[in-house]
Length: 185
Image 1: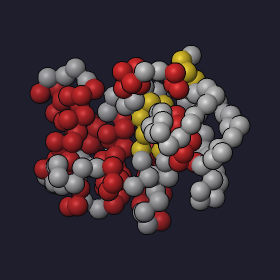
Image 2 (image 1 turned 60 degrees about the vertical axis):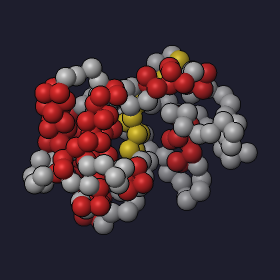
Image 3 (image 1 turned 180 degrees about the horizontal axis):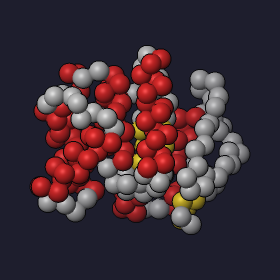
């Protein structure tokens, strides 16, 4: 058994932190909430309730509607979460097309709003750059923008400052706290 008898509740506008040593199951818990663990490798039981529905009982189609739309996640390592063969702009556009019913002009407006919210609007030609052309802190801000794309009500941040220096870590944590208030997460 990797994890046993975990129970917590997250209320609206609340920030909850899971603290534990490396390997204690923090990331596993985060991945479980979105049911992102392989059923072949992990046997999940119990309940993960979100808006009265048990996530573990939802079919893939129902899960896809929740992922990104209602619950979004900022992963620990942005370099592995971003596609290295696609520009930042194309990755954001693809997400918009998949999750939002917007036309081309509305997509560009939405992306520009997100870029401003995560304080990347001063990066020249950001949308045509590839992940390897921006810094670690900038990649993490792109990941935050992607996570906020569909205005989720729950934002999961899995150690979002791990690979960043202390100054950038502080900026990212403050940004997430500010966005939690402004976006009503």
